[in-house]
Image 1 (cartoon, rainbow, N blue to C red):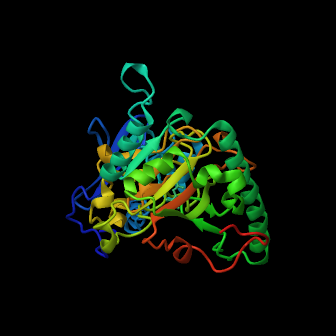
Image 2: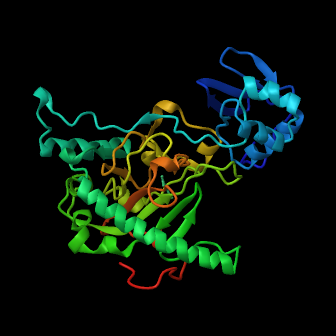
Image 3: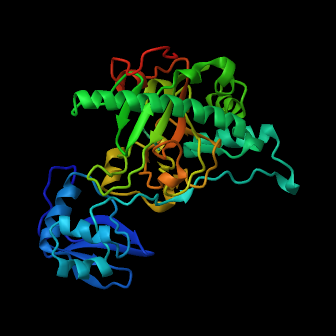
Length: 395
Ligand SMILES: O=C(O)CCC(=O)C(=O)O
């Protein structure tokens, strides 16, 4: 099985627990008597051509696919099948009925992350104290909470504009420098102290301006989300340890690296801290555009912050949908707070027309906060040791 080093055996039946969601159809790939069958919602079963099977098994072994999809009857779909070795006559059978490709589907499987309501009983806005207590308790129990709209402590349109401009300004400079680096050496790995490429076409950047308290003081203190953190940590002794922006570039071409991020935690459990603080560290995400299922959402597994679960396995064995939430549906400026241990992943961004800047990117401000006793290893573990851009570097 993928990830375990074991090759699927002929007698394995229904080994592949992924689905294709195309044209409203859910299709499972089932292995029976050594042959892959695609079984549609109406239980019709189609053998998957042998050439395609090999490719599919290989991808599964590499853990690259959890869901498969094909844009209905499209030219690209047909081309994709051809590239996988399916002959035109076979493609007609497979493509029209079953809709399979090796492109990983890029919409989240679970519910939209939503605040129960911004109104209290009787249509009144929820009093700040109650809102803070509710969000802190949600963060503790589910591992994630959200502040939606300025009335709940989300950021205002002018604040979002400032954040978006600062993030894009830095991103554009970084792109220019990256192009120069790649021209010099096409194999250059983008791993700098201020800019790092991540899977899922993410570029994680650290715009130094975000550390400027005169312009971006609202990120650093006195916001409603700081109140939630205070309440959840049970202490005022916490601090901002990382401040950056996650820029998801659109994945529009059928390319082999068009894959969602792998499920992961941003930091591991620290048993010596949990006894005293739970949570002891969180990530705060602020989408800078309105999010839809197509704009590169982040998907989260509820409750996983307190589970001794190997997040990596979720790539091969997708979690139940009822335990998943995503940032789809959130507005620009909403504030997502999640436990640093919560399993999550970035889903591909496929709607450049809804993004911003020259490339149509999806920007999200990403910050880490932790109690003073927590050491954030983000900057040491995940980044390079040289700056891509010269000039001031923030913190
Ligand atoms: O960009 C996203 O949606 C999530 C990114 C993420 O989780 C990461 O890069 O660690």
